[in-house]
Amino acid sequence: MSKNTKRIEQYLEHARLTQPENGPHRAELRREVLREIERNQTMSARNRAWRVGLAIAAVVCGGAIATAVGVRIYRYQFQGQDDEGRYVFETGPEVVYEGVETDPNGAERHVQVVTSRTVTMSPDHVEESSVEQAQLDLEEIDRLREQDDRDLMRIIDTEVAGQSSRTLVHRYTLSDGRALQMGENDRENNGGGARVLDSSQWKELHDLAKAGDGELVGTYEEQIDGVTFVFEKKRFTLVDGTEVLRSKGVPKDD
Amino acid sequence: MANEALEYNLESRDEALDEDRLLVRAARDDTEAVARLYDKYYNKVLTYLYHGTFDQAVAEDLTSNVFLAAFRHLGRFQWRQIPFRAWLYRIATNEMRMHYRRRKRDAILSRRESASTQSAAPPASDRPAAAEEQRLLHNALLQLKLKYRTTILLRYFEGKTIAEIAQITGRRPGTVKSQLHRGLAQLQDILIDSGVLPR
Image 1 (spheres, helix red, strand yellow):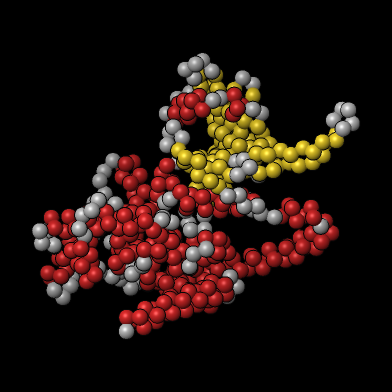
Image 2: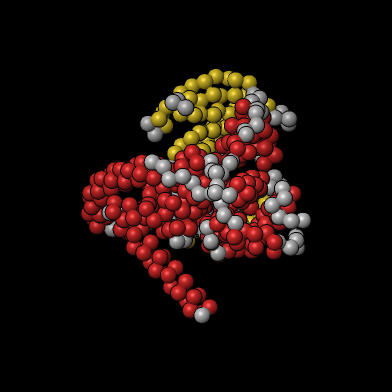
């Protein structure tokens, strides 16, 4: 677009907009902010006392603690958009396991397991800001995940041909106030159900679930991290005949 | 003279940034520093949100969200590596975006048009003509997409540079420039149609 905007620029240089009124809000919010800060400072003083205890433990345990508490930051590279327009980000290869193993013949060999993590983000989120911003968001989400500073919003269990997998949907509140929800595989409860479906089957299942289709099989409750989740289990039959059992759990209070 | 002005301007900006840096650092333990930061930025944030919504009650609600979120997450602030004030504007911009998204969703749910965007009437001015012009400018700004409106507000009513707007919105400077240009072109058309600018 090469439209001449000189006139509007000159106009805006001198234009004035009305100002908001000065009401009691300023003083009320000031009191609320200061109250909140004082409360946080009290809590943080208690946390500091805990950290002293942890530091003493760290001295005893040495390197093991250092590895456990270190926050590793992954750099996400933008890979492009998939068929549905979602933005795909991937970390570089990372070594998740390294060691020496002995084979049945007694020979030692160096073993290294290398993997990378892939994240897809909805176009809405990325296009509202930028690819660079989305990369920073993912890094911040990693930090929050390491500190478990997140809220578990939903749990989705998927069962295909006797194999099940669990997806945890967490809400992450970023430092600039935005809240992002992210579905993550639960490694502790992954029986392979996710791997049985291909991407088109996943999409079909997602569309069916979104449309409210599926035959209700039953409901049940499960305690997870001290919170009671109510699950609704449904049976879906995909166009190719694959039968999928999908349970969606939400906190009981919701 | 121009150089002197520029140098002075740059120096005063740096001083402001340094002051913010010290206050932010102190604010983690010192409520006095929190109060100073709040007093320094309350009006700026409220005015920006008011100009983005032209609704006093909404602007106050969003301002509350901005300051409560900012001070609640102050410990994480340095991660973004942007000046504190840019961070506040970023939170404010996000709050505005979420407000319009919620309102859009509510409008769909209730299946009725919200009339509040058209009700933005500035208070009576000394000159009726000036008041009418302000009303038309308000309405013209409200007709713009939010991304164009916030970019224009930040540039012309908050005095931000392109680089600062890029920091606030998390977009590239080139994208900011192009959004500014598109927003200005649309605003110009609206103001010509409404008779504020001559054809």
